[in-house]
Length: 93
Image (cartoon, rainbow, N blue to C red):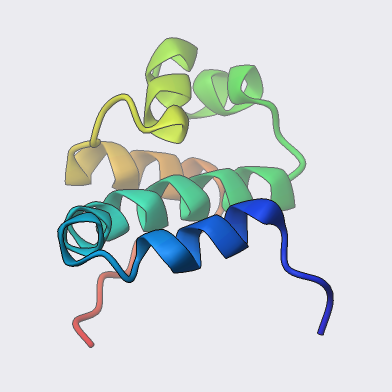
């Protein structure tokens, strides 16, 4: 396994603080949504502008979702998934 980044080292230290961990855990779903959308868009070799054109979702909204500025509605995620040739799937683990 490769060397840990300064971010990873700092995060591991911060996660030992119960208050920080509680806040981090509360945002985990949002981080997962951001990462999944960005990865699917990159895998599809699409820019945000191309995804916007194909999905009908404004590029500025896609940018705000990917940056974590807003948590998207489920119907928006479903629209983006279809435009990326994907199916939105939600699981409970």
